[in-house]
Image (cartoon, rainbow, N blue to C red; front, side, top):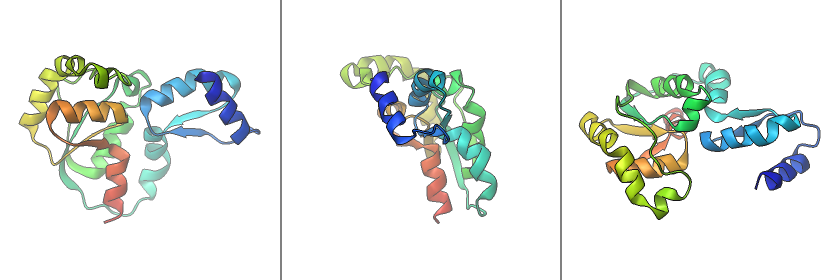
Length: 168
């Protein structure tokens, strides 16, 4: 898959002059490992939004509260401050559960073995239900699927919630 991605990027960006922006933090981490050694710049959507877009947006009508699920990759890449900053733009109150941790969804593992996610998220899921926020967000679709299943709350990408708020 890494070779296939590299071939696609080479054909799309032969001059290597544009950054590659990824909207899924785990993919960003994988793309960085594959592409940066080849001279490509890889940027996560959280970092791009935080650095280049937030200060250009109109005033937003904030929702009351949001609960975040940082991911393993957003933590590894130091993106959690960007996740928090975007969430603070969207909501008056931002919660990150004390008991958050890896959701164990791991690509397709959570689909094939839901008991892994159930076990890994039990404490966080209980805390999320207790917080009862208006919205729930993360930065990777498979983690959002895992957390939605674990909590019964709909998790969406935080930038998706930002776009929705700007559109109102």
